[in-house]
Length: 524
Picture 1 (cartoon, helix red, strand yellow):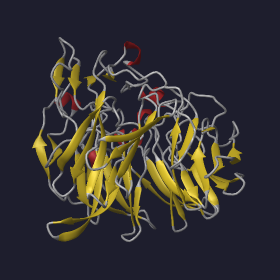
Picture 2 (tube, one colour):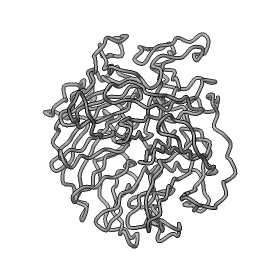
Picture 3 (cartoon, rainbow, N blue to C red):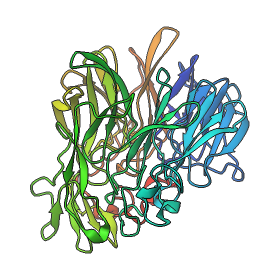
Picture 4 (spheres, one colour):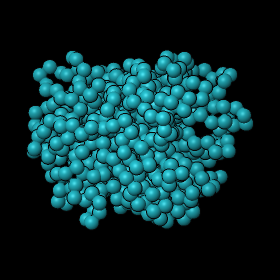
């Protein structure tokens, strides 16, 4: 176990350890990036950003190593490249014209791909490809189309200029098809649709872009004219499956809506089927007449569960209408699936989804808040992607949609970091817990597995999360069979009901001020 921030705690550590040739690369706190020996944890170098120039990043969701360089966010809307052997800064480049780079960079065939966050800050979303050697932009794609672009007519007036559409979670690449699949976040203002009539492309969408040119190949919008903060936040999963006797290349996207959107990734058409259904209306909010409903099962309830709405408040289901009177809805803005990664197992041919059941209260003027004493629970679900039906499901003590996510292995295990500090191995066949280890802080980052000198390791950053109301820390743990380190002392458990202090901000979110809920970076 290594302290990656010299014992300081306060940043959300959300990156996945990346290991190349026995060396592990991770984002630390306050914009730092570290290289460590993957077998011993010995620190090889540590990049410490300067206050000027690239600035100090807050949330950093990961790094990528390629071509002798380590690529990551540099704070603000900067992408940086470090020397893979020394950590020296090689170049810095701007991504778009404003926003914050927090998602993991991606690399393929000489290009590095990165987008910008800031959906609650009124950015115009951007995603681009950059030359790995020089940082020069090769192509760029605006997620909010401007005049003359496809989709521009889905925005009222000049609302597109500050329309949001952040890219703050991981994209996915299919090198054989030559496409990169980009999840796009919320429109802005995120809970006020009064001045941005139309479907508001490409918010709450998956966009398939050509890897070399950035040309749009197809898109699918999961929520039209989103006024519930149901932004597309989960990294898409690519899988090759058999469907009705044919081999199919699919993309699986998990939504805050509680639905899985299963698409043919060659052209974006739904595999199982998605129906446009009428939804409740409030013309003042310019709500869409219909919304997409995937055929099959939702992985969390799409209406508030019995006794989960405070007395005296109105309740509504997933696409409920609201105005000035408070309305409590499910799945809620941190319900369904937020940014925790899903996993697909080629052995079981199932997709595994971490979910959260956390209602949210909406009003036009106040955005969204979490009602005090609201239940905070989750689900762990196995779904058959050929039917979009649940195979098995477990209720979890804590919401797990905005935390560690899932890692499946060929040996039939599934690893997950829990908000109470434990890293847990589950039986992938049924979700039963097989093993756990206390890491001493909220284990809210993705788990990685790797091999050094023939020995398999499992690693996780244990740094806590404001969104999960879990205890902060700065611990990097690595495990192998026969390890002898003792467990850490257990941290205070996160609440299973919404506390009064977190009704807005940390763990609660706000349509007007949600930036503060994700650390210093304005991570969304």
